[in-house]
Amino acid sequence: MKVKGLWIGCLCLITACSTPDKGLDVNKELDYCNTQVHRTLEELQNRPSLTAEASGNSQVREQAIDYSMMPRCIMDSLKTWECRKASKDEWCSGFWPGILWYDYEYTHDNTIKKQAGYFTASLKFLSKIPAYDHDLGFLIFCSYGNGYRLTHNPEYKKVILDTADSLATLFRPRVGTILSWPRNIKMFGGYNTIMDNMINLEMLFWAARNGGNPYLFDIAVSHADKTMKHQFRPDYTSYHVAVYDTLTGKFIKGVTHQGYSDSSMWARGQAWAIYGYTMVYRETKDPKYLDFVQKVADIYLKRLPADYIPYWDFDAPDIPKAPRDASAACIVASALVELSTYIAGSKGEKYKQAAIKMLTSLSSDKYQCGKSKPAFLLHSTGHWPNKSEVNASIIYADYYYIEALIRLKRLEKN
Image 1: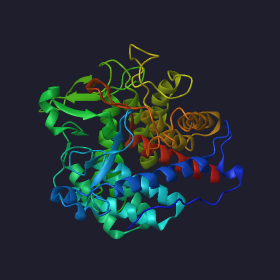
Image 2 (image 1 turned 90 degrees about the horizontal axis):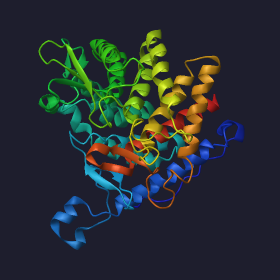
Image 3 (image 1 turned 180 degrees about the vertical axis):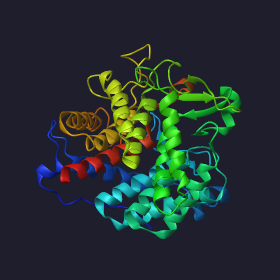
Image 4 (image 1 turned 90 degrees about the vertical axis):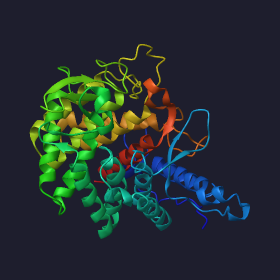
């Protein structure tokens, strides 16, 4: 089966599809994403399957996609995707299926829908095994969650509900949060909860509203409250990791794992916080979360460089030479589009315009891959302390970029 061809969407009136800031054309950028999606599918199809490689038989090297191999990153010096096997410890495996679902939402292209379904199905096994760590929300809700939203396939719903129950087994009532990395308790000197974990709460909220155990809602609220209490400094910048006493549940310290220092504002960590608490307000309608997320967002916006794309850490000592992190910008842009709808007047408009500025920069030649690579974006930073995926194209940047554009398109249409 050959995957090719580019679907070009019918153009809407420019007033419905464009935003007022520097002519950001949402449809144009979504068409670009669709082009890159087709390029990626063709690249994946033209790779020998694992079966073919193992056989060593050139006649077995038929052109077929291995749906268990997910695009992860393209390093700065390379032109093709590094793909990784979908597994319990490959936390990024849900983003590529999620991108396909968003592309299908925009294009209504049934070829993309089929591909989204095939890649999504490769993650079903995660609903049948014990939770390895907190990333089940990223893995399943980005893939199966978007799939169910668009298709209402009852099999997708069952996978989400089963996985939510699995994620809930990592919750410890004595602490009040979900354990993020069971394998790293010794390394951190205690029970650990990372800011990224806020995103996984969305699956618990959804499950509680859609036939799952109502207790899942309580788990999500407890986690959000405990994180809000202990994982932020007085200026509303966040710690990447909160460490708690494993036996008593008492908060011990806040540290970093991927940021510059324990006291610095790691860009993607702050982005997860903005996105996470915006979502928690949506799910609970508790005004304390709306008030809190504005404070977390405002310190982030206050410290941004002129083009609204953060350096990988706001306190990196080599700014302005430090690497940027486009992925953090994508996450925040998506969150601010949503947050702007919850706040009336000039403050809500401020958040919307900030999101537009971020997307305008991300959609420029400086940050888009264009013809050089099949990914959407350049210049993300994965794990600077480990020198891993620095100045790279990374799949979760692409996911939150297309999500932000889709959200902005909905907002402008309405």
